[in-house]
Amino acid sequence: MSDQDKPLLIKRYASRRLYNTETSDYVTLEDIAGFIREGREVQIVDLKSGDDLTRQYLLQIIAEHESRGENILPVNVLNDLVRSYMVPGGGVMPQFLQSSFEMLRESQDKMVKNMNAMNPMAQIPGFEAIKAQQEAFLKAMTGGFSGGWTGGTETDKPEADNGEGGDLDDIKRQLAELQDKLSKMK
Image (tube, rainbow, N blue to C red):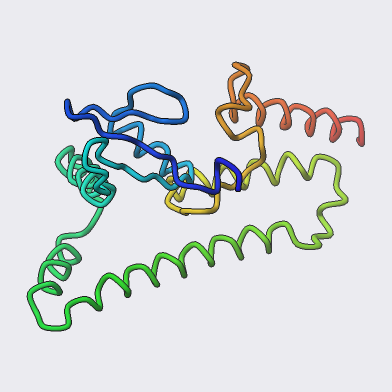
């Protein structure tokens, strides 16, 4: 099992500081939110007791974003969540939400596969650059909301950046190559 397949283990010390066991450094809630947006699962565990604190910290991340004016969940959804736990058999809501998000991820996966399917445009010089731009656009539009789908290529990953500017520079380079090829075709 690769490191990306298993959850990133974060340990919470008695001082409430959060420690990334892979990189051996301390992280913030915003760092954890970034890992999740990149498609990585996390597990947050209390160092002393071994209790799983993941749910508590994920809710805290959502609450902090809400407090900054970022409307993560509409008020009616929050009301429905609270209401669902107040009625007998209210355990239906978590399964409903989980199924809904699984359907969303599957839809995104299908959209990417359809975009990559045997497309006659794939024969056009520079198609790969256009496809990379579409994938970057989809990734930006979904805000990393896609769970397991990371979109893009290996160069999208921060560790593969090599300090060269990342996605934007890569897209600019591919676009320049495409423009060069198109101008040579004229």
